[in-house]
Image (tube, rainbow, N blue to C red):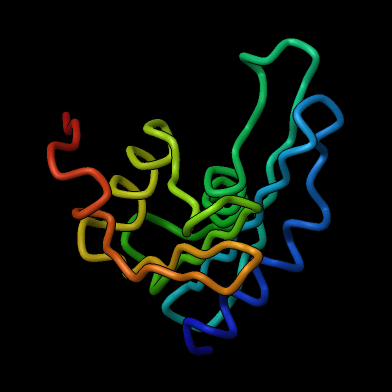
Length: 129
């Protein structure tokens, strides 16, 4: 699966988002090294601190399915933003820890704007234990 197809898959995942409060839907698609794709969407809660972002949903679903750190090949994320969407800080930390610093990422919006980056570029000073 190429990055364009992965971004399309993220767009489909976006439609599944549960965002009754902000109305801001985000989708993600995480490709594993063996070709599986895990969808992610944001899931809101009336208690905003309990919300989960699309990127983390995709990674956590893959981990729950038995995948481990560094078994991921690429990530795509899409949202209705002016330019390509930007992951939040918490998602950047999860992406770099589970995906590795060189994980290719395609960020996009609903108007066709895209940006290709890596986990390291998104979080150059990541926290590690």
